Length: 383
Image 1 (cartoon, helix red, strand yellow):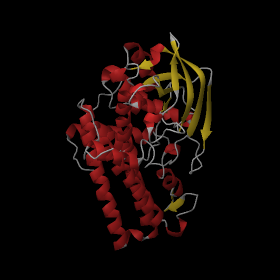
Image 2 (cartoon, rainbow, N blue to C red):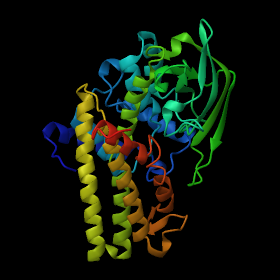
Image 3 (tube, rainbow, N blue to C red):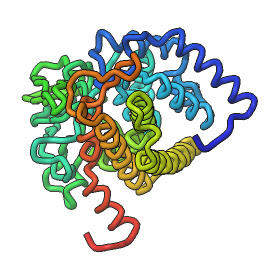
């Protein structure tokens, strides 16, 4: 959007575009809801075999070691074909954390299976009473010598009912002050006895979220990531990666493509008022893209992202919701239809993606929390 491919990057874009066009199944294109595991994972594994599932990971850990430009190209070309959302808890969230904090044994056990798609991960951060105020979590892990005994409840796990493992935050010192000082980060095999998983249906009638109940769950000591009671630092590093992912312009670009197709089909594309609205949205997403790829460059250089992740999360989710609202507007009287709309023979989903976007300002830390982070850490305002 805001850069020009050099000769080498242009060749890579041609390679990516050609391969995706030939290999991305038609039935997976333009899907708003994430397909079920049995349908989606063959595509994940095809990208993995091609070497493109983890472009941001270093090569010595199974990634592509891609340049910033190559990462941008992959994102743009996947968006161009409206490729389905992949399960990213392993690739984007846990993988970078294990690369940085994991033991050699943890890396050897888990990283290859993330790359191959053999293991799907869930994230165990939020709890029924600890969402925005994550440091108040109450799931506890009691030291039993060679293992921890974990009890508590986790909620809002994306793809939790399909996951094989979960990374989670637990309280290992209930007397610690401040309260986040007694939190640890650990991994749990979801086949362990004592774990009950219950799917949750969201506003879009999609059950990709889950709630998990942990009753006397045995977690080996070797599944602790980072130091005991040192999980808060690990958690914040992971949240920076998560917020970076939610600020990607890919989803907003897909919505813009749908807006333009519908507007061309119903004649609104020539309306000056609509053109002004569309231009303003495109400018906002272009600025978001520039910010996003600058942040990717920071991460690729091994530097911490810091509160920039909060700014990008705010911008990205606000743009996504603005884009879906314009999509509803351009659909006119059909904006509330649950069926796909016809745009000169091409079915366009409107309602599903609008409903899915409603949660964007909540997950990964609500917009209110992001503003509080910026107020305290950037502006120096009192907490």
